[in-house]
Amino acid sequence: MEISHSVKERTIAENSLVILLQGLHGLVTTVDLRDESTATGRVTNVDAFMNVRLAEVTYTDRQGAVSHLDELFVTGRNVRYVHIPDEVDIRATIERQLQIIHRVRYFGGRDKGRKEFPRTKHK
Amino acid sequence: GGAMSFLKRFPPPAEGVRHQQPDTEAVLAGRSLGAGTLYIAESRLSWLENSGVGFSLDYPTISLHAVSRDLTAYPWEHLYVMVNAKFEEAETKEAPLAEGEEEEDSDDDAEPIAEFRFVPSDKSALEAMFSAMCECQALHPDPDDEDSDNDYEGDEYDVEAHELEQGDIPTFYTYEEGLLHLTAEGQATLERLEGMLAQSVSSQYNMAGVRTEDSIREYEDGMEVDTAPVVAGQFEDAEVDH
Image 1 (cartoon, each protein chain N blue to C red):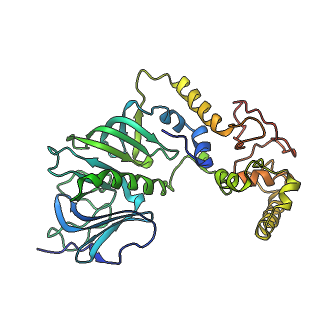
Image 2: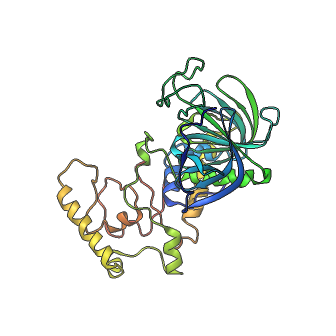
Image 3: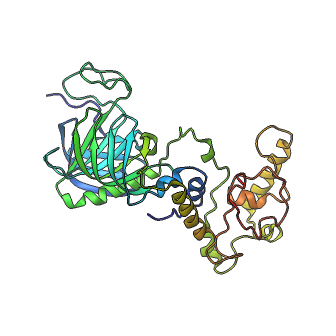
């Protein structure tokens, strides 16, 4: 999963827990949807708006009927919960994702590359 | 039989069409609407039957979409689209259902749901159709997003575009250099923003810490600014500490 080319999306990710979901790339994850259906599949993309793309999905609709979908895209608005897999170290995942963002931001070292200035509220 | 009253005649979208798939059947809640062309455009999703009538779906109303190749669930490989709205189904009711109106035999107490399936005759196109829809959906983020932290003021600073035109030159100017590079439009914007700031200095609105002389850089990169006073050159050698 690529880091977004959008400054705005990188900033949103860095300042919200979407960054954790982005760290689940490649992991089999269950997403509970707003209409009480659920989808379990491998995360292939999560964007800053929490739109989630899954592959090889087992989808259980709100009536309980099960089907298999090759790929599923659910809009962020319709995501109720994302079940973080037990084996995921949440803190390490967030730190790793932050490092990836910072590599993009500071590529080329000081005074070169992209200068994006995050909010410095949290210290 | 009765025609679906939500079907209308309209010209196919001309702009921003990311993918177009002819010879595609549209199915609503298990009822076929016929064969036509699916247009996955940036503004909306449209399907037009070969006779020229069809319908459009707005991306904000689409909850999810998927590629289904599970023939035990549905006998043809298709693009599944779940919409947060009600569409009239033929022969059951006279008047179109208002959004949110309940049906007796469904348990959608909270939300109206309509299930569309688009069955292309060319099954190999499903990947491209799916991806085009993902791209278009991403163009329509939820405006009702409650998370106010996502509200970043100002224009997005397009780093790539700026770098392309600058080559190896650093992408940020000092204030003085920046003034020299302003176009007439940029100059007008600067004056307008300074005027707004002058008016709002005493207001409660959260623009604290922004000073006109030093603030141009913050406006350019569109980031929310810390409440600490800004000093010229403050960020030039920033080591970010989180």
